[in-house]
Amino acid sequence: MSCNLSLLDLVQTRAHHLPNGRFTNPWFRQDAPALRKIIRWKLSHLVFREQPRLPVLDPRPVLAKDLSPLVVFLGHNTVFLRLNQRNLLFDPIFSHIGGLVKRHTPPPINPEELPPISYVLISHAHRDHLDLKTLKKIPGSFKIIAPLGLRHYLPKNFLSAKRLVELDWLESFEEEGLRFVALPLQHWSKRNLTDTNISLWAGFLVTEGELKLFLGGDTGYFFGFKEMGQLFGPVDLAFVPAGAFLPRWLMAPFHLSPKEAVKAAQDLEAKQAVPIHWGAYKLGDEALDDPPKLFKLAARKADLKPLILYPGEGATLKNGLFRPP
Image (tube, rainbow, N blue to C red; front, side, top):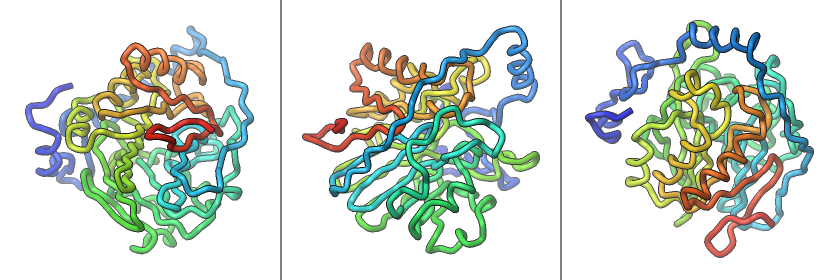
């Protein structure tokens, strides 16, 4: 959906801040999926069967001990990164969602087995992105970098300035040779009955020297990707969510399809792109292993370099591109 104002104008005028202290997508006046649509979707499963196919996966992650930049996909939206001799985690979740939604594939590694983590990036408060049980198991005195309002959900021991950095859209934080910028996305936030959008949602641009990585939380496709590419591109590697995209009549406003994920990566001027938000939980009507297959096909047609990583697989930077070992 287009908008008369630029993304930069909307952010600078704080159009995403509502008078009641909550947040919105100022270019798209839909604050959350309509309950009637969710009920219609669930009832449709009584007539139409979901795609049950699950990938057969039990890999171990490639956590190389050298100091070169490293990325590892750990399933769903969880990504491990090693940048500037620091270990980072994005949207870490390793078990069932909220104890209710089953994880269909085992995590490639247990959180306790990870090397000490310096930074944990959280895109938004949904339970498949902010998992409090996982946070308690992650080794290291890590700092959480998150959008505004996430403090509503964190334990007290994470609320000090040493442990938590909350960013508004396009705000940045720099430390230890790394720069983090919170980027606008088209989504929403909720964990409980009455807390819709009391916290913000965001993706992140992570920069180490000349290296730029995009980490995308949940989002629908919107004009902002093009403008962010103009502001921050080119991006060396973009992690773009491409799962939980069916049915489109329900998911399209807030979840990218694989084809849209490719377009978003192109808008960001990404040299390479990795599809994420798949491979662990059955959150859409597509099969668990459809997103990477469809993303790869769309990327090849669009002349985008896809980097397809299955849970547990990683890549290191070699000659300007991320490549599996």
